[in-house]
Length: 250
Ligand code: ADP
Image (tube, rainbow, N blue to C red; front, side, top):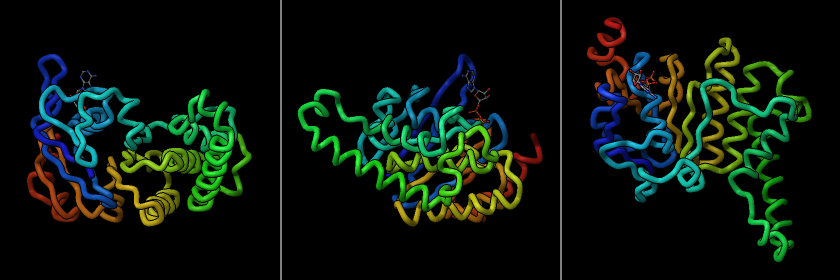
């Protein structure tokens, strides 16, 4: 589904990614872990086109996406959520989710004018998908509430809902449990797994909580100083002696 081949990126004299190779399979939830400053965000920014790799190549469904502008990559079905909640304040939960869908699937104005029946059919499809996702992530009770007034754990869930509504083929989740209490984390683990099962979305999960990575991800990669230091079935990868040393040594 997503491949990185020898991906490298520099910031001035600092090499933030050193020839990263990755293969993420369809329907997999793949963990991306590593100490602060190890290159996780840089890798995500390379995949989503914000900081394209200066060497190497990234392919999505076999097609080269490195070098494309971020909006083109997004339109191909590569979506992300952000570490800090990035919702439209003042708008309701429902409008935030709908906007996520419209921003990616907006029909052209000309098309909508000539083919109104098509636009209407699209609108119905939007609504159906939005309702499915609201149901899946159990947001029914807050759908009309302004996003600002609901708890942080739920705001994170709205962000996930907004990303899922665009029906991405590949979704990057950037620390979806940040700031959550234990109960909220357990809910989120369930929702992510349910979303993958219901929609078949392939995901890349950046996460600091190792219990969460072990619970959700079948495989994981560990970065340190821009290098891949371990990769494989999650439990084996995160318990690798090199990984333990990298965390203790920082
Ligand atoms: P992580 O997400 O694992 O915490 P990052 O990818 O944010 O790590 O950072 C990797 C390295 O690249 C760090 O040394 C960081 O300071 C550097 N870096 C990241 N983004 C930039 C940038 N825009 N300009 C300069 N240096 C950067």
